Image 1: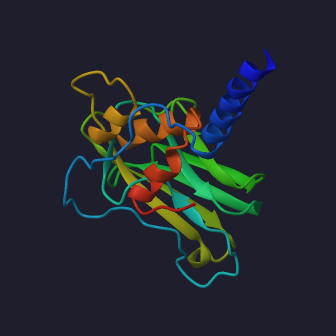
Image 2: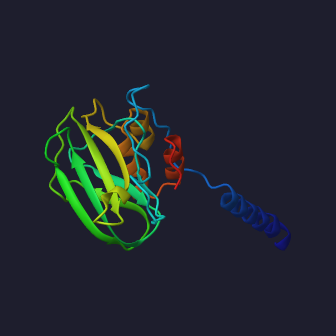
Length: 201
């Protein structure tokens, strides 16, 4: 009996090692296709409006061009590389109108990806309109030229058909839906999606 048991055990161990070394990524590969190829860049990357001693990196997680959301009140994401007591201001605007959202966070307790739910803030987007999400790290309230600022644009557009997975969302240009799906599911494809639009966390 032992003679026949050993090969089976070795096979199982080999399979386990291979799975650990080469994990299988569930679902189709997520490849983002901008809804308007060649559209002008609207994203403002991590940086400051003046000299600043704060070394935190700030980044709205979005493509360079305006991308789509299928939700009237989506969850939007941004990243900060360092926790600290500095205040963070988040605004959502549409053209020159008064901001739809103005939110202040008094210090960041944990670095990494942060979320802002428009639904929790009772904000609803209008279909076909372009909006700008701006996140500012306020190093010195008396000298706002030292703010670290990142912004990006989005548009609410009702999809013409349902999607089977995140890959289909990305193919259709719905960045914000794709990102939300990968973040909430803790997908291993998240880093790849961000790199496609020039973001490395």
